[in-house]
Image 1 (cartoon, rainbow, N blue to C red):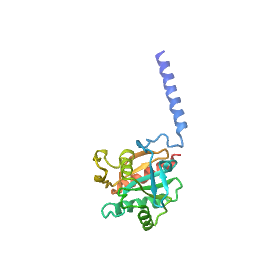
Image 2: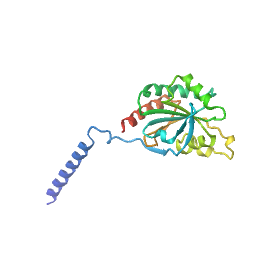
Image 3: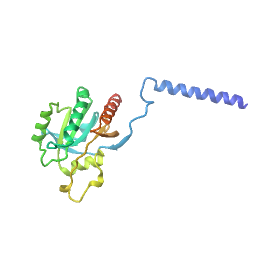
Image 4: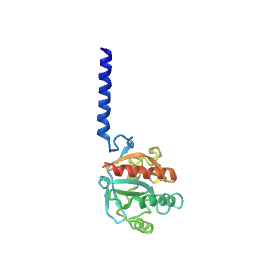
Length: 203
């Protein structure tokens, strides 16, 4: 009796394995998915053309997010050189965009961001530059995109300054995915490119 039960169990196991094989055959569903790190909270900023840009603009897009400032002579030029490499690969994909937030809105006005974007020679429908209230920008960096430690908050917003080298990756549903990528490290930039490709395939 036990031998017959063993045969039945083996048959059932093979049947179940075959079912899942054909269910996922030809798809990426069997692969390990990129982890969800956070969720983008509602926001309202202004882009380089003076137009409103909200969290709704992230929906149905794969978005790479960064913080920078136009007068930076340190890490920002290198970060945006690496970002431009990513832009060059995916700029023709309708479902891809880059969103760069200023961390110095007192200097980076709409005209300043427009001039900076023009200097990069990029399509500002694909690579968007945002300014807004400093406290709102910083809250998004820390609470939504995880690009700066929330412990860096101090009592006065005037005393705060974010200078981060990290990029975030947001999926079509406004979820921060994968990991927080170091924009100065070539291996992490390559990983980001691969993860963008994965999310673009995921409809």
